[in-house]
Image (cartoon, rainbow, N blue to C red; front, side):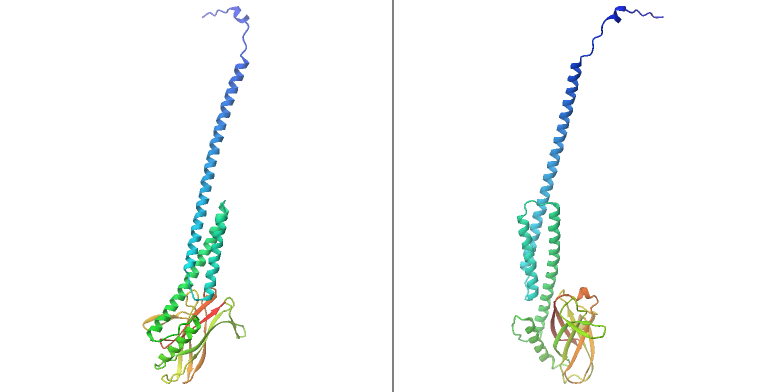
Length: 314
């Protein structure tokens, strides 16, 4: 068995305590390091947050500039819209004024946020929708005027240049009547379109308000023509609303080998003399078809256009 030798003096020697100052310095150094790391971390987070802030701020400024570009584009669009229709001119002027007001507001705004950008983007959206509608109305009126110009050339007539749309239609109807009187057709004159509301009693109430009108009533006079034999005759009417849509039952007839969509028809007894008749146009969808603005009315007899007129709803 191994032997162990112990020196008694080893147990009697006093043991030196650990230095307390050395331990404190070590802890202090660790604390300093931790604080330095924490400060570096916070500094890094601060830099990242600052970069994110600048990135967001730049994105908002870019959004603001894009809004300015969109608004200036809308202003140019409205500057190019022209029409002889007084009500349409007023609508275009009002829309253009709103665009200019938004441009002025946006130019004065130095600081923008996401909520403000969203607000202006929504307004730009609605202004675009309004622009598209006005462009469609202007195009529809231009197309109607082009049709009238082609009829003028085909009949070789001289129409008096006027600024009033009704006077132009009246003169055209007179020339149409002179040319068509020689043929076996019944020309239509005194064409009057009105919005009407039908009460439960059956009474017809005339209204100039689009939201109150349930139907469109077209009244006219069939001009007597000795070349046309007495008997049952049929008129077709075509009513085109301010959006360029034909309202009513949309039956199709052929005019000069071209399909024409009509709104309604009316059979009547012709006895060789001027005959007054009224034709009611019932919309398929009142809210979509009966809107405020100017309507174009065309009248057809025996696959021939025999009259045209217009009406206005507020």
